[in-house]
Length: 269
Ligand code: SF4
Image (cartoon, rainbow, N blue to C red; front, side, top):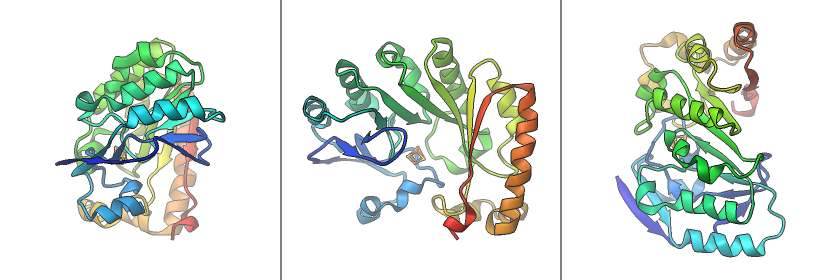
């Protein structure tokens, strides 16, 4: 694992992502190292020529820059934290960039949306509970996905505990099942475990253009049934037509507020 420092001249970047009009990423790269991560093919990451999941750049003077920008930029509506990295890197303890950034957002009363698959966010309830526009997405999945495709993420059990803690404390938390892999993600099990612990569940379908598909293919070489669904447009589309209805039917038992994110196959292949 390589930890490197990077000089930057700004902390916030404008974005067209609907969740917020600015993004904040204090790290570049990610030590969680998910095979399905789309960020590994970003230009800036490709230029490093480093193995995905084995390096992270820590942005120097990030918090100082952020404070200056929060004082001077007047059109910030909401900030998306972690659009291209896991914000709770395992070295966050050492650098404290995320929690210091959140404390600044609180100071300037700027709401945020945070995306994470680590449970640490639940340790900072007193810092994050300042706006009803704050929104926290925590990724969950079947444990097999973590074991197969995520190098350094925390067990699902711990993420679910974090979701529950935020939910009990009345924070806006969403259990984000992503990416959902056909025949591997067990929706019955996840719905059952989440019962009473959250009210919103969003589901994102895995698509073969997400991340390093040749590596994923190798890891699934004994699961031709899954590869057949992923690699054939018609099977993929009909799988999701049926699966969506099936999930909605199962959800009648649980009543989660559900949303699906299923990318059009043609927009990739
Ligand atoms: S944790 Fe998020 S940013 Fe990091 S590798 Fe996984 S998907 Fe990518």
